[in-house]
Image (tube, each protein chain N blue to C red):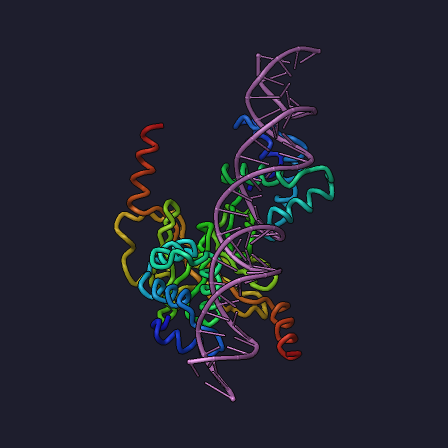
Length: 148
Length: 148
DNA sequence: TTACTAATCTGCAAGCGTTGTTGACTGGGA
DNA sequence: TCCCAGTCAACAACGCTTGCAGATTAGTAA
């Protein structure tokens, strides 16, 4: 995504207004690369601006997604995650325990499909998702197993 | 998944009862390889058994998932999709227009990651998701564009 | 067959993440 | 400074899924 200052410009170009609420969301996303959920963004913005509503955060996230400034990810963690890195093509690794997400670079060109895709299908995106348990959740899991 | 007859056996072994409702769900899943949603399974079962409840379908789908007989997929289509093919490792292609899902075989071994995964992370599954528009939805889309 | 009981059924309410609505408010171009 | 399209907060409603409760039933053991 672009910097908060550049986003101000781009919002105005689109006839969208730049409010303090939106700027606060810009700043949080620009600094947070942990692929936060809307709720997490809301909590972080609310620290600076306690009156902001979750609805406004959703609205701004949707606007940014429409403008291609961020990515809306559905990683099966229950809620959507937002990724401010649209510049570098990358994939994701997800911990099924705590929902932690990390970027992973993979060479898509090396990927071979063993059959043709359906006729006329237009691919918009090929996504690789690595699911598993992070070090921390794995330890918790083994601890729980030991108890039972 | 196993055949309805074998599933009967396996359910009993687990102390689960085999009711007419469950058998109807078994049969629908065994024949339907289109990765139906719970709602779709419900509709198909309801044709034969109009009194079945959606709740029962969900319950049976969850039981089958727990037993590893089917896969519970979150492909970002709004509702979970259920895949009765657990035998052959495969990936999925999804139409973002109509939600159509098709299996795709890909050679995961050919996939190269450009960096190491986080220390201690245990991968449970690496999933490839091809998103796009099917021939039919693409045509509809272009038609809509032409109008506007 | 019969009787018993744990498992299951249905219908409804509730949970969660997200979006629609509404009336008051405000950014920012003229 | 004015003005109004765009935005805000609060609340209701949505779609998918699960929790709950009381009535019903599968399957075992006698």
